[in-house]
Structures are given as structure tokens and as C-alpha cells.
Image (cartoon, rainbow, N blue to C red; front, side, top):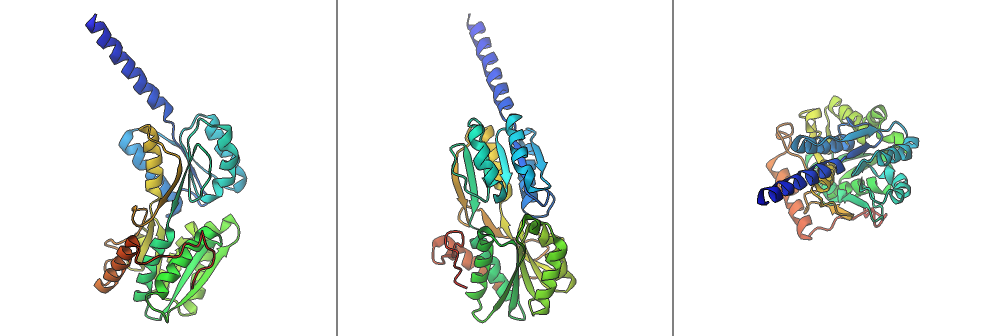
Length: 331
């Protein structure tokens, strides 16, 4: 009888385990620009790949080619039983607002936007904090006293990058000049390297010798143009130091990879929580990148200044303006 009971318990455990595996059918939806944009989307992809490597659990992905595909792609994933479904980018919010209520048993996660629904995890970042750090470094690295910023679409989210960067520059060198431009007012602004290069050349012509981009795939053109001119670029989201070694001063790391990885892993472990996760320097959600590709560009003085700013932001001694909550940047 005892052997029968143990055997029954073992069979039950196996069934539960198999059921859990069947329930975890992760899906990842990329934003415009494609999964190999060397930036935001690629970081999402890397987080999903890490999850697959560690767990052996497969996931499905989809790269949209235009905004009209968002609702259709999201609904198809939900109808196919994908769970959880992670969306990279704030532009998914309208489709998610509509569809999440139609599939109350599906867990969704959106990166870079808050969608207040009971089955949605919203992951946002304190981009202003990481951007402040690279602004400090830009001010100290600049020989001309003029630096640049190239954004994608002019939306409040990118305003967080811009304002944080400008604050870091100006609070390090009060007589510095920051040239600011955006690449467009449609989603195509995220995937136009040619336009990014043109803007960068224009900023260089005006004296900028360090240019920070927050423009997705467009930023590839920004970094290329800066390197071609013998100037310094600053990468974003992923570590882009290696794209042009010796010409990328640093990169503002935004751990989108961690957001995707944790969403998948939490679901697998039955620990998926909803609501808002806001990740800054203290939470390891943003940072600046140092490696062999930029080590020769960053002096001990520069690194010490950036690390002090980082500690002061975490302690609260420096409060970086959040453009998302107040659209009036002090600089």
C-alpha cells in the first residue's frame, strides 16, 4: 500500500511539473527597428535568449514592420496561448490597453510604459539617472565645451534621456553648450541611421565633439558619423562601446534584458507580479558602461566624478529631474 501511495504521489508530481511546463509559453514582441538594432530591441532579445539558455524553455518572437500590425500580433499571441507576453516599447500601450481585458488569464508585461490593468506588469526605468552620469562624463571629455544629443521621437520618454543628460553636463561644467536635435515625429524616427548621421555631422560642424543618442536603430548612424569625424559618441540601452572601439566614450545601460528575463523567469517560477516596477541606479536598472573598448578614453578623474555622481543620486544628495512627471527641464 505504501509503495502504491508513493508511486501515486510521484506520478502526481510529474503531472504537475509537466502542466507547469505547458503553461509557460513565453512570447516576445519587438518594437519597430528590429531585434538586431544594437539597442533597445536587441537588449530585449538578449534577455529572452538568456532565459532560454538557462531553462531550456523555448519562446516565440515577432518583429513588426509597421504600427498597424501591433493589435493583430498581440491578439494572435494571446489566442495561441502565449503566456507571459512581453512587449518591448511604449508604442504597444494602446493595443495592450484594448487586448489585455479580453484575455484576463494571460500575463502581460510592457517595457517603457505604464498600463494600469490587473494582468499587466509595467516596467519603467529612471533613464534620467543613467543619462545624468553619461552627461557628467561627456562634459569632462569634451575639448570644445560643446556636446550634442540626438533623440528619436520627441516624446516624454526620450525627454527623460535628454533632460538627464543635459543636467549632468551643465552641473559639471556650467559654461558648457548642449546642441539637441530629434530625428522625426513618427515611429520611423527609430530606424533611420542615415538621418542620425546627418544630424550628427551638423552638430559636429557646430562644435560638438561628444554626441549622445537615444534614438534606437537610428543611433547606429550617430555613432558611425561621430567615429568617422574622429569625435566621440555615447551609446544607449545596450553596451555599444564595441561598435567603434576608441570612439564610443561610454554607453548608458538600460537593463531591458533584465526586464524580459525576469518576466519570463517569474512566470516560470509562479512568481509573476503585476503593477509597476521602476528601475533606477539603486535597483541596477540603469548604469554606464566600462570595458576594454573605452578604457583608454576615460581618465581616473572622469571615472571618479561619475562614480561620485552615481553614489549621490542613490543617496538622494543629487535629485535628477524626471521629465516624465514634469515636462519642464531646468536646462
